[in-house]
Image 1 (tube, rainbow, N blue to C red):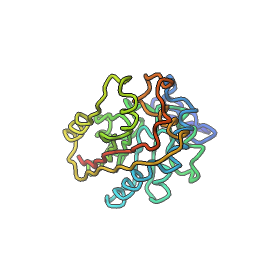
Image 2 (image 1 turned 90 degrees about the vertical axis):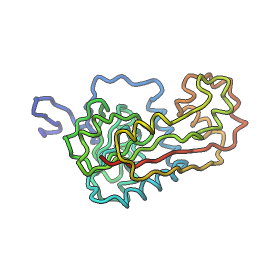
Image 3 (image 1 turned 180 degrees about the horizontal axis):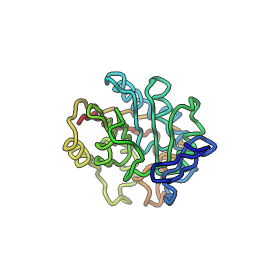
Image 4 (image 1 turned 90 degrees about the horizontal axis):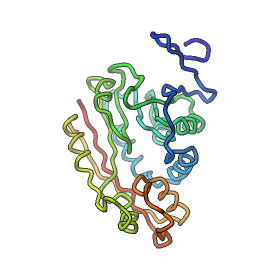
Length: 252
């Protein structure tokens, strides 16, 4: 570390922002679907508790795993899970996302100031080999080659994927506009099981009544409707949304 910058062995210099995060992905372009406004809306939805049943199960899992001193939250978005987990556990937490806007919000919201936030690419994570005890892969793509590189020999990966009934109300009301009217997570699960020994798995699902305002925020958040003309959907017909997930714990 030199002043307010990090200097690697190859003489690359990365500045530490005023909010405390580091940007290791300087040339990445921002996706139009993941703007600062969208992450602010996601943060609001998460803080309202619509994903609390998933958070509860993740914290339960972490409480049962042994020798977890370093946690890596990949594709952390606005940092909801990392922040909540840090309130309950003493482990060091490192969290990153490809979006600078997301990490800026996460770092700003982090009251503990003890989580290490950075902007980074899943394809080339700036993490030392065999230095992570547990990886959190929550509703985000995976890079198992990189995951296996950074995990300790006794490390774990906690993977959360959408269940088959996740946001099924959107799928039903917009089915005429969807290329794939049915969703299956079978291929994702099979690939995970090829990489790791599954030591635990559980489905967690809740249906929440919510105001139209929140339903519309969900509609803007979900990739399911990214390419759908939402003006053609009558969201007033919906009163509830189902948040359905499958959680797996794998070991090398």
